Picture 1 (cartoon, rainbow, N blue to C red):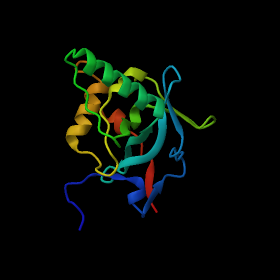
Picture 2: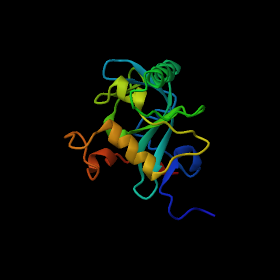
Picture 3: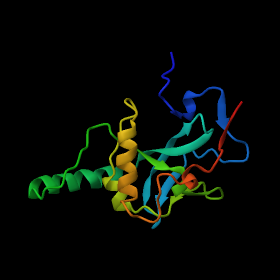
Picture 4: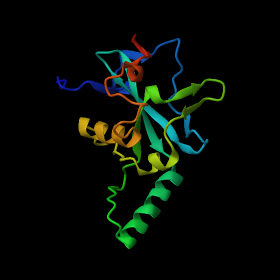
Length: 168
């Protein structure tokens, strides 16, 4: 039985949907930040079935980014400077709003132009075995776009402006 409250699905969960023919299927492509640092690879697409839109990229983080984060966590714990990091083994995925990236079809690279490496390094992760909830979405969006950031408005349709998948 389908959960009536669920509105986000991985594209590969929806056997009757596919990426629209006029868009690139970016699964498996590399994603980089504005300074060309590797963030990871696009593992899947999160879609809002009601809107028929891709809303998030599901990114499996690059090992170096995870290791950088672990080293910082060790330093923070050693220095006890009050910062709180939550990292559980296996949590190696993050979500990135589709509206905050550019897709280069020639190089097959996705670019997150407005979010820096340190932000990605410190963003909360989730484990694909457990998916994520609305609270996780809010935490991630806050880390990408702090309050009063002119680049993000949670009611802004620009983040959900692409009809990138279609019913087969």
